[in-house]
Length: 321
Image (cartoon, rainbow, N blue to C red):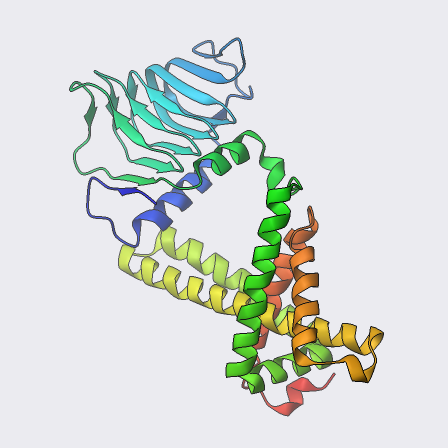
């Protein structure tokens, strides 16, 4: 992974820039070149793959699955699944996800440059930037991010292939090992979590779902509204809760489901903790790989995981069905 910054790279830069450009997508003033506000200064190439901006100084240019060329002026530019080439002046930020940002000679960028899955290049000594503005590049998963930008629906409906199946097998093996390790280190915690799932699954899921939404809202609000160091700290704490919730929730759900499958379909002589874990891992890996279904399964894992953490030290009264 390649990191490049013009100023000191801190833990707040990436979350802030990600949130900035995520909310930029929802801004009411945004001009999507899908044509909500026709502008003669914004045209599309004959092959429909490049948006050419001549003189649009008051407009944010956002495209999906296309590249952008700024000939004269634009307010800001964001390309998802395409490149951004600045030949003139961009008053504010320039960003791309799954593409490259190229600043031509005698061009100017007045804001930050954010590149996820690509590189930032300055061509010629005449290209200028406003002093103190940040440049953040993360050169990883370039092809995957470009393909996603050009076809966002693949996020909800992945394409099945040999490589996809191989990845799922590796993921299943990884979670099987993780589950065995955690159940060996903390068998009591996993056992109590499985019991709570079986006795009070609706309560645990509802509490965890509410806490998950609260944590996500707190991370976003902290990054946007609070001072930098407080927002960064709150974001790291929230991410830690989410990671712990996901790992513990998935392990507990896998063991619980595996035991349920054993109880329903296998005789007592063929039952074991290892086999239950393996069955649960296989089923949950399948659920998290199915088109569209994986979104519900992912939210379920987060909800149960956080709910199990919150109820981990509760009294026996909570465990009543």
